[in-house]
Image (tube, rainbow, N blue to C red; front, top):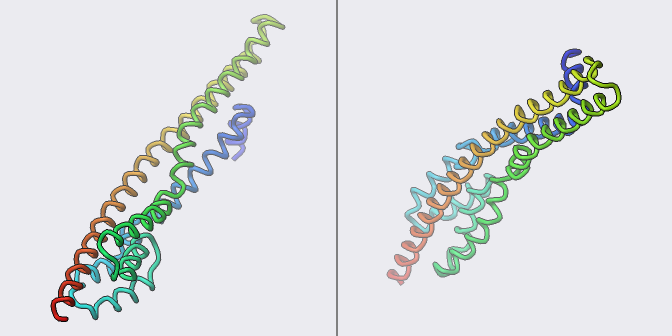
Length: 211
């Protein structure tokens, strides 16, 4: 622990925002890893209901199952079921509007993670500049004989640069990973939503034919 504190103190003041950035990035990664699990997003019970929706009586069961669950998938399917009497065009508009709202939940935290991946190396570069300013200040006042002070300034410059990259590179990798996962979930949700619209339309045609 003492070594970590000493390492951070050698990096200068820019290590404070770098440390905060690393903590925030780690928190976002853990939260997204938990939230963006496939079974948590694409709930198997709801998928089964959509796949087996063949009778008007099945709609009540589907509504009950969707109301028991939370999340973007359950919310969109429930919206489609509750607006089954709308025309296909009107239903698509309703689902599109609801979908835009639900996408926010799937992408929560990702803009912040992207910002950290870009700003961490810049903070490291800022630390480098500040460290080199100290070096040149020592040289201008005392010449090149103060080796320990020169080494301290150079060390600060190198530590912040390395720390910024250590934070920024994994943050960028995880941002791309979670963005791709969220996009895939959105495509899957659209697929099942479209299938639901088709089945509802078939049920309405069957009902009209009987009448």
